[in-house]
Length: 101
Image (tube, rainbow, N blue to C red):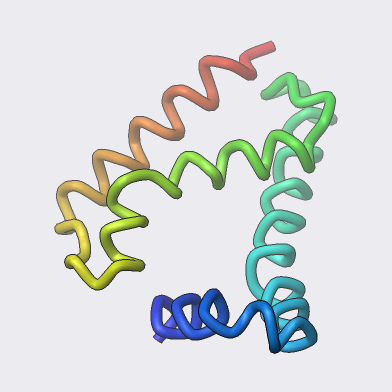
């Protein structure tokens, strides 16, 4: 699972730099670029004002790295579906409010 991969890579980061780079490139970096592409298109269409799509994508995705994420990485449990939906809804609300044209 993805959490297990994160835990293993965090633990091996000082000795497995190449594996960590590959994991980042195939996972998080790809996701940031995909979200940035969507935001760039929204900016060009005028539906959102996002002059720096890559930075905005990184900031948006960072909203999901709070307490629940840390608890999951530490093996203290995953948030329930309702908590996940609440976090997603609030992150989108805050992000869109900040980027309305």
